[in-house]
Length: 331
Image (cartoon, rainbow, N blue to C red):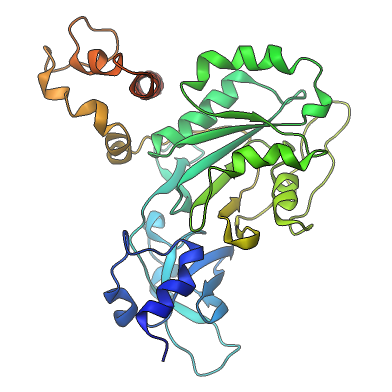
């Protein structure tokens, strides 16, 4: 039987670490893995013993709390099977470190969980006719509202004649977010954004259809793993080529990226606990505020605002927090 140290070593490139997961889990659940793909109620799960196929239990299929069901990026414990080609029932979903969510479509105020256990979000936008500042800002806010940092990747640089102008237009909404113009004809332009990842760190790519998320991931993987389609030439409208979410391990275990289907709009789901955690450095002085009902926006004497203005890093965080409050109040 593989010992715990070997299991940790085998699962580390997939993001399993002692900081978030107790080694006792490996005793309680001998077969642990990370969901790399979901096709309805069927899952691909990467374990120390290789890729396994898994399914929901009968109880999970009828669970009304959809937010607790397994999603791509989740760590899960699988039940053992007697046959190699048999589906492994998912016993339990291990506690999530983070989750990317959005507000579900429709009138009801419901959360739709998308992918789990992320370290950052790559927001991808084209520099062609897809370029839309308001949409980009909402995608950035989706990351912030889930307690995650964002990195902005601007694709299709070769189709843009005024990159500097567009970068200047973006400056007011970035609020400390790193931004990188990326040219798929020059793979070296991916080196800088890739530096935000390392072994075990996981990012999700989000953005509209046709912005080049799958093309970018193929470039990083060195293969045509993800299917791609051309956008319509007359209006740059993308087609939904990626129809599922899939976690991919980068070559030489340099990190993990989850590709996601294009989103027509960024519906923000405000995760209060995650927001409080991300902006804890600012909010730790909240009790010193002069006002018990202070929103920490422009109120004179606000201790959070005063703390934020002392250095650039906290100023950027305050600007992010402030924008989230404004967007929340507008919903």
